Amino acid sequence: MPSQIFRRCLAEAIGTFWLTFAGCGSAVLAAAFPQVGIGLLGVSLAFGLSVVTMAYAIGHLSGCHLNPAVSVGLAAGGRFPSRDVAPYVVAQVIGATIAAAVLYLIASGAPDFDLAKGFAANGYGDHSPGKYGLGSAMLAEIVLTMMFLFVIMGATHGKAPVGFAPLAIGLCLTLIHLVGIPVTNLSVNPARSTGPALIVGGWALGQLWLFWLAPLVGGALGGLLYRWLSEQPAAQVTGTSTAPAE
Image 1: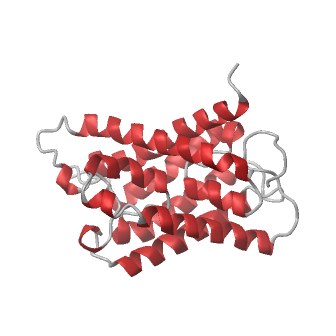
Image 2: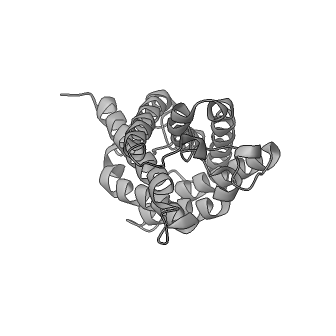
């Protein structure tokens, strides 16, 4: 039988695959489809729905983080064992990378496919949808990730309404995409950023550092802020019964 941590990491890899494939796929394949493209609103909903569906599918298996910033933020907030952060992050990046590769294989089958259009990679400056500079991009990613973690911490708290956490978290992710897509194509998730950047290469890899640094800082701030506001003990977000967070 596979070990518990292996099963949890496999669930995280599958979940992050789905988030990256569905979210980035909606942007690459459907956002600008002639006459009936789903646009910014549709892409935002796709990311939110990917989290809602996976939260119900694997939340009880792994906690459904799907995001290194979430794992780091939950650990900072005392809701996730710090020893499990590294294996979760590795699994999330693997899942996102496979998703980007599969998406590329599908998208490149179109006669007008052009990787230079960005492939849903995150960027700032000339590679920002709205041409926002580095400072704006960093601040947006930090603040939006911080609020995402704040909502996750609250929605998964023991005193929150039971069974509604996936909806609150998915709707929050939709909302922050509505705000942040014009600025950076919105990351708030280093794994989601890494997959497309590996396919695009060049400028996307050169700017990838921001989409690790800012979400990780924002995630830690969100976890710490909620931990400071709510001192009462709350359950670990691991999907299983584990020892208290380190």
